Image (cartoon, rainbow, N blue to C red; front, side):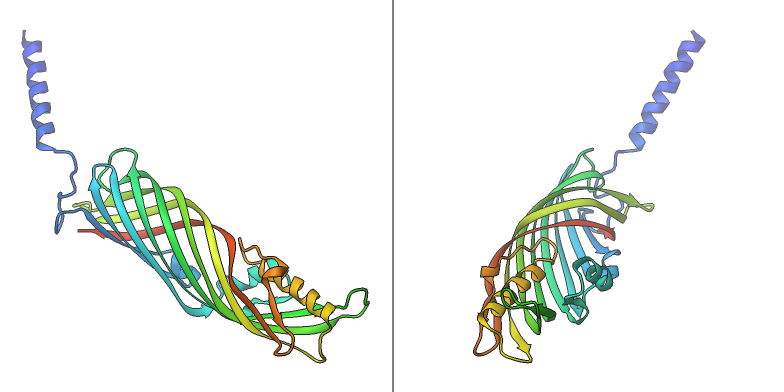
Length: 268
């Protein structure tokens, strides 16, 4: 009988302690309602980009996030690596790039957490790039000719993309009040379409023949297509022989990219 009484007392005490330790809810230790998280991407500055996001907890296991990212006009990140990948005809070191994007996304926390735990995401991303000083040093030839003629091309313009993606990540809450946030966006994949508009000039020591112009058209399309996920055809390149002008007018191209980051934030 004594053992039974001791067991019953232990169960009662454990039930009391459990009642005194409620499950985490967003308003726990929050300055406001605890459902808003603001974050800064701490990995993006390595790519000369500044990214911020705000996440709003909608319900248990579900949230909505809006992110923005911007890159001031600067040289291309990792330019030496890219130049080795695409070859020596494109002078990527002279290229200057400015960008902006925004990304609305829906997150589903698989464990039902209020803004924490492993999550799956679905998102849309709009990206806008402004390019200047896009320089090529090309050698063109007349059909059947053994000699080549050097041609320099300098372009500037815009590239805008719209894409949809999915991904996964994990988010943790730290601190006495669980207000410090660490968000690991493990991997996202998005794909869609882009539109490229470029214009500029070409220069050569002597006038180009029609065959040399045709070769220039192919060389430019091949080199611009060396940009990740950009696919152009020779017919997309417009050449003005009299004015020595080059242009691409809102050329549509497939676009795909990956997404990964680590962010720190605060929950209000």
